[in-house]
Image 1 (spheres, rainbow, N blue to C red):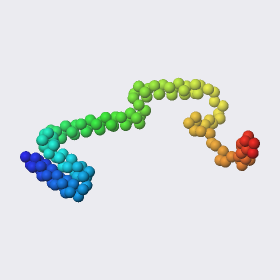
Image 2 (cartoon, rainbow, N blue to C red):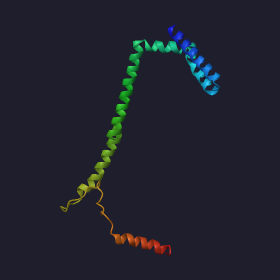
Image 3 (cartoon, one colour):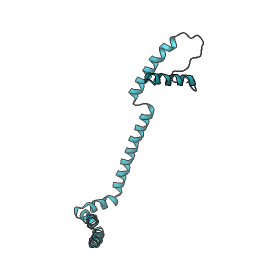
Image 4 (spheres, helix red, strand yellow):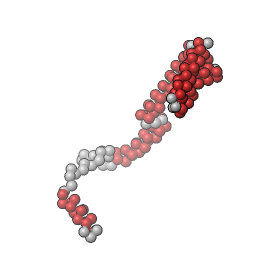
Length: 147
């Protein structure tokens, strides 16, 4: 009953403000204010306010929201672990098998005692190209265009 009274008062105040705005020849704003001021009365008339008040004041509803939150948290955690760990168990087993197959031929090759660089590290690049190489390229481009 209090919710209906408050909603009616808010709507009446909003309609009054809309009337004042329309009197000042700002019809677009007045129409928008009138639309917003009719929303509380519409919510009361459709029963949404009663439904929301039932949700707010029942502890079992809040426990239900808590259970839903825990379920969502578990889903999100498992998804994050799955992404970080390399996928599902089946995908990890397939990746391990592929890795074992790739390592097996390299392990059977005879070693000459020389240190080898791991495949994951790229070869070091030269710090700077010689200036003569740069000018040779530029000369070739200029000659190609007849300059």
